[in-house]
Image 1 (cartoon, helix red, strand yellow):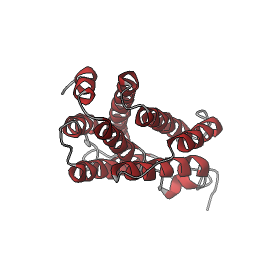
Image 2 (cartoon, one colour; image 1 turned 180 degrees about the vertical axis):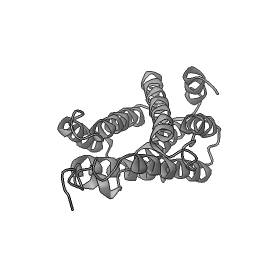
Image 3 (cartoon, rainbow, N blue to C red; image 1 turned 60 degrees about the horizontal axis):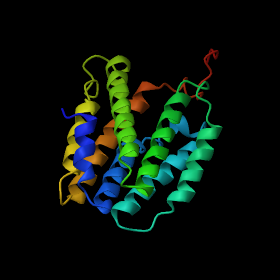
Image 4 (cartoon, helix red, strand yellow; image 1 turned 90 degrees about the horizontal axis):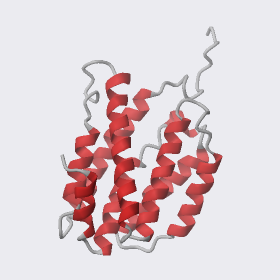
Length: 203
């Protein structure tokens, strides 16, 4: 498994458009879990911000103009409204909002390798945290208990740095990652965690 510095060196050789595509694929991998109904009643502002970040990523891949400044402001507002000490999943939300803002900063300045280093480090942290979540929260033997997001992230980054980038293959790879990632998060939080049931109810 290559290091972050190796990944950054490979990415530095890419043109701006390819770098932005790499950033867009990161958003798709990590920001597509917002649709779980257990979370929606609690964080509509953050949900919408993550959804818009995901939509923007698809726009970048299609070569469409994206309002990065406006989206960055939306994410900042959602992050400011987020309480990491709130319900059990609120820290989860904050972590992903922070990640999305960092990716947007890179999309806006694709030659800023310091920001890209931060983005890759953050992606590794999220991947590892959710590997641990899958192992600890899912039943033993569950098909997702060994999702191995860390290895998937490493192989995705390496493939995304190939010139020319096969955007369709990168998109399919990232959407598969996003689906597994969303399922692990959704399965790891109960309806009680999300406030959908009353823990004191006797019904």
